[in-house]
Length: 397
Image 1 (cartoon, rainbow, N blue to C red):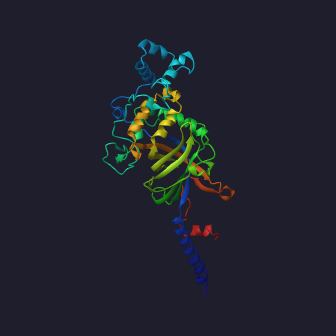
Image 2: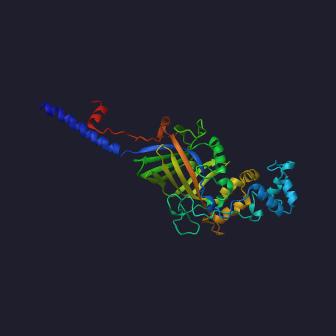
Image 3: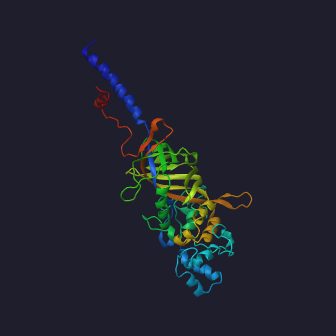
């Protein structure tokens, strides 16, 4: 055998091995982990055109209206509210007890809103909203149009009810006051919400990905600016109530999932548990490694009402949310899941803004707390050497 043959044979083997490994690496996929850094009701802001009938009154205004309706004179109503917001059980808060039973003067109006007549809530009449076409109908009279994509048939009746309440409105990029106040408390009190995206072959286009939404056992950490810190580690809570597996795809950097039910434990300060039907995710994989998008689906409307009403006067006066008016509006705008007996819809279409930053997600059932998803990275999971010399070096030649 010649010297030439002695050299060419191992080189041929190495070249073949390099091609085989390269092919394997080319088809390899990665899993990225995230922690939710923002979650709040999605409310489109388009100016006065959203609410041509005007915005809903502030709490002092609708409290005075109710006092007048109950028979108080103008001077007496003004006197009752002069020390607004006042203190429950004290003279400066005398009106609070009156408002709490303003329906029939004896029943808790927050727990039993139908003890009061519908005072009327000014609702969104604009054309645009964020969300999904949950029922497949593009020409429904309740449909909106997505302001970014122009997609028609968007269903978001929750926004229709909330969108003309002042505390739910804010010009972008600001978040609405109430949602911001709630989330600012929740992210410190509630264990983190985690997202994993598996099967990513290309961050711009991947035909088959699996999205897992779960709850952690730890809280988020904040950086010096108060924002949720990225690249932190979180253990997954094994409680199946907050374990959701969705299937989807990534096209042009946008992840969308197929309709599925999503259930996740939250916190009583907002709502004890979210439970969406026919829910979908649309998330942009941003160049900095973060996620930004929408979660939408049908949700039990009464549970959403009670998430505000359980705080009674506190939520009502501070956020200017007329609770009986909200109750009747949600009941009126519910658009899915009809009750077999009454025919009334039990669920309402919703959409929520979701933002998330890269995180390390750890599954405690894995031996030694094995890390199964890494923080998002602008680099591919495996770097493939572009030449034979690189492969030789990697193999120790």
